[in-house]
Length: 456
Length: 95
Image (cartoon, rainbow over all chains, first blue to last red; front, side):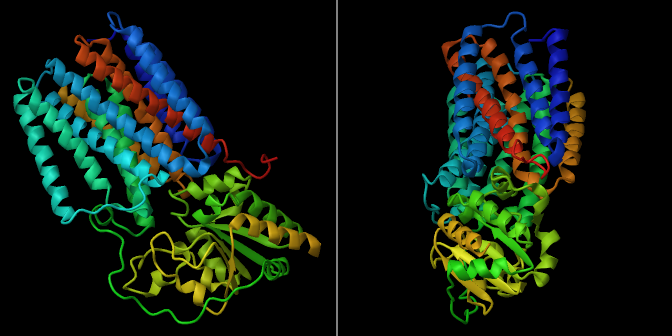
């Protein structure tokens, strides 16, 4: 079906607004305006589609828009900021599912013209289906529905075998469909299973990179289905996201020092006994911690996901304000993968009202720890583990870390004596200049605030 | 659609996506992932076209599923991104 010029024109403007909006989102000052502009583009593209002459099932379309769009709109309003990563995962998966479903309808109709269209439809269906089930697994893991990583024996061989079967079935679909509906069904089932099996063994710490990868996948799938439908707006939006998402995935993987192939094919486990850690963990009280920071010249706060889980960011910001009024210089140091996604911690701090010019990333702040009196580590673990610099047997060896250990004093607020998300022992906690403050981050920050106030 | 023309669109779109992301500060990685997630929600337009041409009940059912999923991608992606970006403020306008 060819759309009339006014519909085509609206789609064109929509695609332009997407690119303009995405460009706006690449700088903090214009980011909010960027998403609003892209939003107008989406509304325009959807509204114009209703004007295609001869469009059937308009009631069904409207109903599906209301159910899908309305449901997601309401649930997205309610979700907490800490849970944002899994929401991005699930909405992304739905986009992939939609792309695969478009291909399924085209196959069912059997009126696809030409080898290129059939091939791209099949490829888009495969990528979209993998993204759909894979993103659902990513959501379940981050949401805590799936607690552990499930590894099959010979996982990598199974992955490769399934991938080969799905590609083989895809080729058969290209050659024979639509004469063979069973073949199409088998193809979709294997593609969906492939997404599940590939994602299940991946640990929670690697999930952000995987979500970003699936985001790029969905973009590609949408672009390919756009070709099949002869819709350049879909091609442009899909491929722009595919390319942007691929680059974003690489940047994230680089920040974690984990090549994408490692994330997909090797679990994060210690490759040897590791260096023995010497020393003991030393405790201190909230009063001592308050005094140390109150009379310090410079304090750098290193927040981790533990702070976010304890919802301590508001208290921490209150504490920061009191310290600043007392003349202490306070900065926040954010590791690229603090939180559950790169930049997630910035969002959480921003929610608490911390202005973004107080927040510094790894390259900016690492040189300053040498002149820092107190480094306050709140609910962070792996990102300040000095073993990443020295211990070749450590699974996190080579990951860039925040050099909190170089500060005069280190205070670590931590719930218990356990290891971090990656399950690795932290050498920082055993060093001479490090003191542990055991407890939940929120009441602890509250106690420190009380002591600070009494010091005046 | 003309195959070669589409290939040129693919190439230019890929460059555009790459260039837009290339110089982005780390603090915006999460919102950008979320924002690009919203943008591929335009798949809902394709799903609407497909459902709008569906003839059998099976095609209607899959098409309905596609539109609902695509709409959820667009709506959810928008709200999540907008909420995140709404929080980025400089010190002077924080109050």
